[in-house]
Image (cartoon, rainbow, N blue to C red; front, side, top):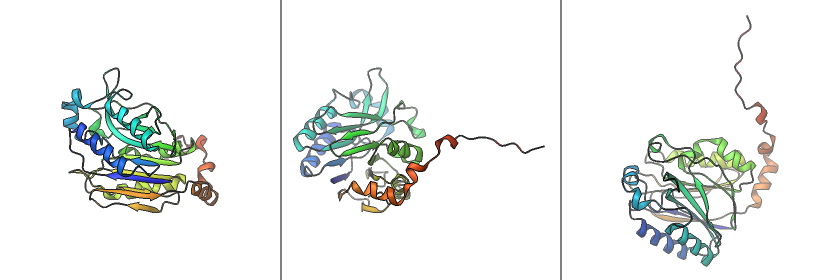
Length: 263
């Protein structure tokens, strides 16, 4: 299968313009199976702006303009789109969310569940850690900071995820985290992992695609780019035969128990 990973500067607050750019990029790369955009691609990532302008920037996950657009594009091009956006739920709460639109089906939703500390005053935390079956395989969605938590990736891999998709907004001087964590999460669980990072001002780019052995398949620098890569999902089972750790865990032991010294 073919994937495209978008790393583009996103003007903050220009949701309409960013959606137009999304549509052009999908059309330009409509021959792939999966397109992954960065965290908060639709609005750009600036917490102060998102909080101040949430009334006009936040949108509904099923009836909003990004949901409608991605569903149309995924049907037209017969592919899967993963994109970050600012969601306002029916109860008024704001979420840092992903839409996953696959070949015309109603887009699936993922809400960031492990918020970076600076995000806590702005967003509510999601309460579900899903895997999503798409025309491009079974995806394990995460957002940025969440790839710091190995248990998320392992939970998704055990549930059947074949590709971890990690839209991100990792800041400058943290390029090493993109490579180290993405490669580790892929190799830990013998899955593919895709980190699509923002390169807007203040963010480091360095988007990356990693295979189930932890090897880099494609990697970006800081400039605007659309990475293209070919993934062979059969590599997952082959690697798990070589490295069977995922199925050999003992979760019954993974509970801390304090041992007191004997008197």
